[in-house]
Amino acid sequence: EIYPKKPIYDIPGFPEILAGDLVKNLLEQIKSFEPTYTLGERAETIEKLEDESFIVTTNKGTKHHAPVVVIAGGLGSFEPRKPQLENIDKYEDNGVSYIIKDPEVYRDKKVLIAGGGDSAL
Image 1: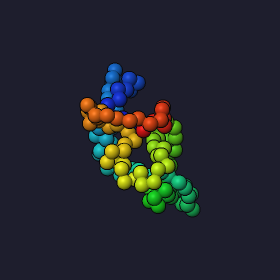
Image 2: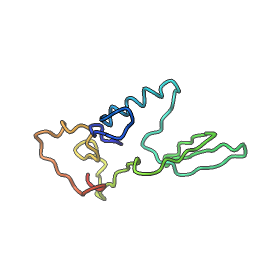
Image 3: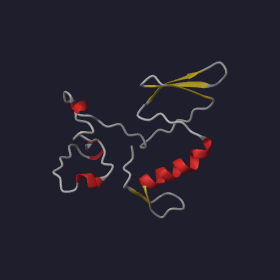
């Protein structure tokens, strides 16, 4: 995920744009191509078929058939490093968050941030 309130300064045509607004603009631009999305999953395997097309299978078993596969690796991928605490999943999105989408939610509240840099939560 991307922090929607983060200002971005290196997009051609935009001296400054919030990350959330950039995502909205990109989704609007691609709408005519009727894309589909698989969110919250990670590509695990790529299989090349006899007809030279590919099957990409995700960690949740979703299969995508495509004539071309583009691998975009790097810092754009975010998967939280969850603490090894029993039953942590019961509190996720109910007190435990791995990203701050709207800082106003936390205004005038006591907040604990654990970790630092990429490991902060």
